[in-house]
Length: 166
Image (cartoon, rainbow, N blue to C red; front, side):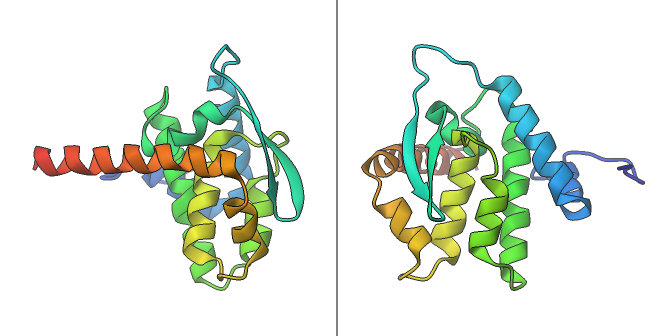
C-alpha cells in the first residue's frame, strides 16, 4: 500500500493510521498487532486473564498493556494507532457493520493482547444492546471489571489534567 500524499500524525495524532485503516483494514490490523507484539515484554508484572468473548474462551495476555490506547504505554505511536483502530471500528459500526464480526476480526490474535482489549470493551459498551452476549461476556468477568476500573481512574485523571492545562 502506498500513501499518495504527505502525512502527519494530525491534530489528534491518528491521521496516518486512519488512512491505513480506511484503505486496508486487514493490513492495518496486521501492522498494529506487529507493533504491539514488538513492545510487549514478558516480565514479573506480566500476567493473563481468561475471558469469554464472542462465544469463545480467550486468553488475554499480557493485561499490562490494557491502557495503551489511552496513552499509558511505551509508545505514543502505538497509542495513536490504537485510537485510529477504535475510530475506524466506530465508523464501521455506525455504517451498519456487525459488532460480533468486527470484534472477532480485531480479536483474531491468540492470545489477545490487552492493548486490543480496551478498544473492544469501548466498542461493546457503545454499540451492544443490553441483552447482547458480548456485553454479558464482558460484565461477567470480575478480572475485566477490576482491570477496567483502573482505566476509569486513568481517564478521569487525564480529563482533570487537560482541564488544568487549558
